Length: 470
Image 1 (cartoon, helix red, strand yellow):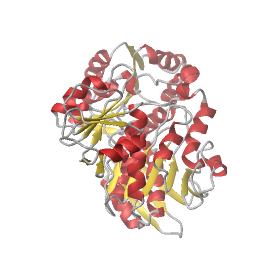
Image 2 (tube, one colour; image 1 turned 135 degrees about the horizontal axis):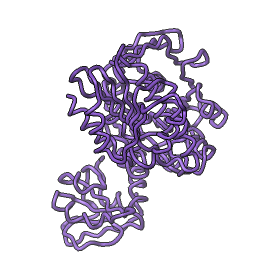
Image 3 (cartoon, rainbow, N blue to C red; image 1 turned 180 degrees about the horizontal axis):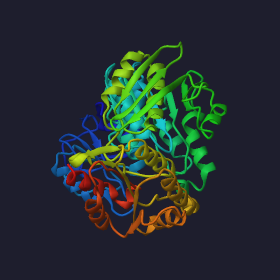
């Protein structure tokens, strides 16, 4: 975090300063990292004690002090020998502090902000942009999927006076959440990747999802840029909701930044990228899955608007070999058995994309095995979407389905009812049973996909299979 006095932090958070028996004064300067996780506290850092659904961060404040915290942001004074700022709501205070830090760094005149949202692909696009922009100047981007009311401002607080680019991943599970993040850090370039059924149960339907994702562009200024997926029928109409200049990306001729001549293979995807003015380049993209090409196009669109040359962008894209841990992560190798661990999360769109990739990278004469768990947070759409994935697996000719857990059982039943299979879909209750089944039945040359929502926990099954077949 940039250097701020205790008094400046108090003013930003509408809090109250408590020296708590220390020698700290309102003029004492704090410039350490800010975190809500006591395990991540560094000497001189700031620990924000937030209340969670199942626990209270105030319980972990002693551990934060032991690790060297110079300041606690708390909702009530704690009997600990460390300076404290007492606030009404710790999460609100975290956001307010981030807002002030962003304001101060922007005032220096060099910071540009890119906001990224969408039902799928946010983290991949953020990682691609970070790699591209780091070649040009100091860049801050979220770790992992830090994209909510806590993770996003924590990332913003990593800004320094030298930062030139902030890539802010902005997720939401309800209307108003992205707007809240944009009030902290309004993007110069706002990206909307795709609107699908991910978290539709939490949003209360697809129209609410569209409304929430639209918040990325509705408050942009005419001098800003909205980067929109022209191929998504729910994203393209957002052009009518913004005063910003629109840049389209996609696969069709309407896209200003587009990809053609796609070739998918087990080592990634190759494609030709064409940008405004007619310049083009061949990209050898190591991130597995044709669907990630759209994320590369979105990252390219934003980087171009920030003045990055196409050659530099392509070099950055080609440096990235993994979207993120547990996202189309290629593992294994023994007996030419490949494990694709894509079980960080799953929506109907990402599940379908992963299955299509599995079918595309199948080795001649070998088999494909899909180990699938539940797609969570779909609400009323859950049944029909699991049906749709079961049908898709059959129609793609996936050699063997292993369906894990009661939440995904309907997918298994639908695959059986399709009528063209005889034992090609197996249902098991647990990841342990799935591991035993796959390790006993996998043959040389097979490609195994592990895919589920985070709550199903199959990412650890994917890791275990990757180690087994290493």
